Length: 293
Image 1 (cartoon, one colour):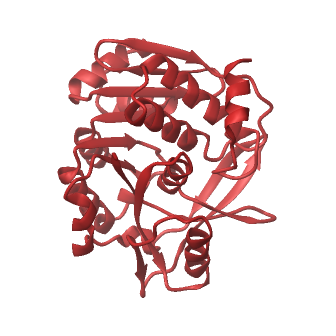
Image 2: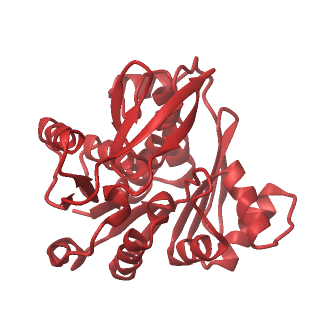
């Protein structure tokens, strides 16, 4: 069975009236687990109330927590979320446990034969977690980067390192333009820019999402576009994470083709926006109904 590890932040999304477990790599991990995959999660939480609630959540959902480090010095991460017309804005607390994810000897258990590593840029904002991630990317057979730029937690050197370590790059349209500017490609046509990025960084895949309009994927030979499904969105938090998890499951686990994998991933992303929370319950009937609509 293909082994997958997701690396990065797990935290609590704090809404005005509730809190929901989140963090982009955790969301991908949770959806991959719900789809029946062999997936582990590497992160760090504090030895505090919020950390204990994360452990309880993992236990309740039968998620593996053996690579979830408990930090005695730093508190569990949280994000203050406000929604305006369904679109989230974030206030991400700094110097929390997932900023200091250690490289532990116990990781050798999974790293000896790791097929896929999934990671983003946010957990690299602190040098400690960034060092750990760089070591993990060297040992994984296939690296999937969901750039996931948040606030000002990036710079040229860090983005360059992250993209150069990847085999598969997923970005949204704004992040695609950020790469265009950072690396001075100065390419105005989206498709040509995607081609350039794949070649420049020796990537095997580039995937670009554009919200409610479309998504695109390129593997060096084939370029596919899927129109987004029209839904009544109420909460867009986690849509891209569920999209990515479904795409990984369909393309790399089930070995489906680019076109159908992209379309199914689009369905998961769209359905996510119709529900509250970053990893809502999604059943096969809902997905089939959307694909057949």
